[in-house]
Length: 263
Image 1 (cartoon, helix red, strand yellow):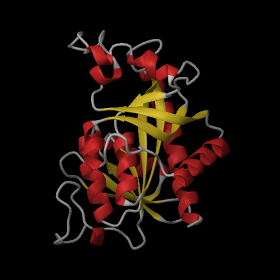
Image 2: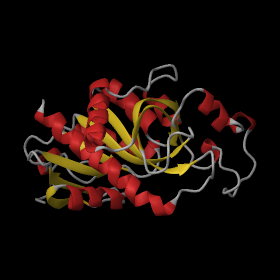
Image 3: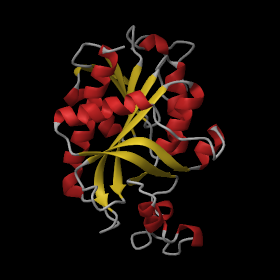
């Protein structure tokens, strides 16, 4: 990386000038290790872009040759909203979240992936972007591209609505594995309620990301690897995590490649 530029973003640690010409897409992960994995194991010409405040970012080239940023959002929507805001300021116009999730529906098995049509945004950060009644909807064309990529790769996938929460324990009705076994009344029975609404999974960022996409004017999508079956256990199935994440990454990379090729 070159000298510090005046427009270097405070939290993500890089500027538009640090990106190759034509960089418009970012693959966004909560875990910095996943961001680095995407760049080093799934992209060509990987290199470090910035390491700042745990929000590590990397650059690579898609199979078609286009540059892509692998960025880290941190855990939860408040941190993600900062990163996404700054990515947009560097010229990013398409963001695909590559995450992990716990399934709510019995037919959504551990190891499969879920692609979001939209989200139930039970998030304070989302409410700061737009009112509660404002739709947290993914970009429809990017969603179709994600589903097409999953089908072409033969990945077991589901397309539907996610539930986005601010808390991993209380907001996702974890009491047996939490330091706080006393859930608020409004959170008790939420898994059953969401199951009856046809919601596929819990996660922690998509709702805010989708509202930001609509309000800020960028394309937003999300694919999550399923690592827990909440109808069976509160705990992730650790031995299945790597395979589920790998499937989500492959879907996201293929989608980014086709998205830019058709632009």
